[in-house]
Length: 323
Image (cartoon, rainbow, N blue to C red; front, top):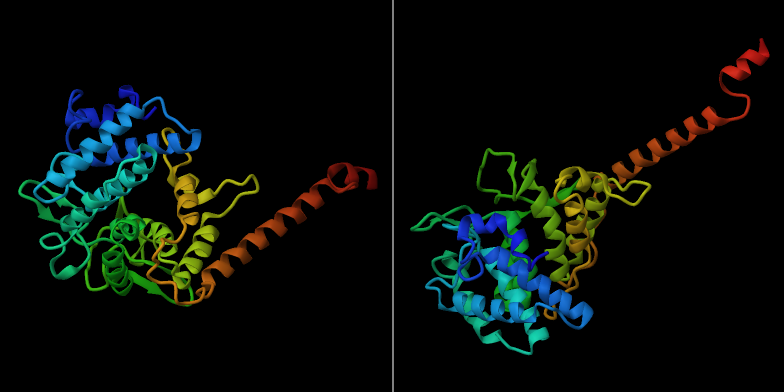
């Protein structure tokens, strides 16, 4: 499916049928590289090895030769976190191809420092327009960035993780999570396609992908309460499905997207050089116990109703016999 041009219509509209694999288009090409490399790792081979090799070499060269070391997802829309994901995909493909792009990855860090992040701070959510117009730093984007940065630039990633936790982490006895915008920034909107809903400042995507970011850092003090809260809020059903991620997914085109994303975040392993592995597991938020109590109450109520409904001698027949 990934290798079939017939499934690339959404990017061909932006980059053209003949050029969508030859210039920029970072997010799609990252998915293509990662998908084909994963196929090769699982099955020992891929029928699209030539395509994989050509995409790895061409995207790595294009990123390295870019003036900013960044490329766009869509025309005039550059998302730095997706560039980090692309570098990570290239490194994973190196294992399959027997190549090495580690030096180019190291040089690619300059796309995330200097002009992009003055003072060594977190990169902005995106560059829009030409010349580029910075957008604010956002929680969802940097939670995604921190899935990849520890395996690309460990020292810089540790610095970013510290800044991200100071500016975006929010915890109380009742709930924990990552904000979509820093505490000192006010943004009135209640969410968009990338952030998901924003509730009391906490971003659904920032908190969900924050599970993976904290697991990568081996930061159990944040990873444990985030994961427990996410599982409770997902409202697991008796058939194993997760109600809330299922509702938030596109039922027609991607019905498993929310559940797959949660599984991905819950299964990430710590990086070789984790930044936050010194603390113990964090406490369970009270919200988790409240949801579990509500689930128990509803389950017991349903059980009592079922027993009364199907108990021998119940219902209209029992009343008729008594008459």
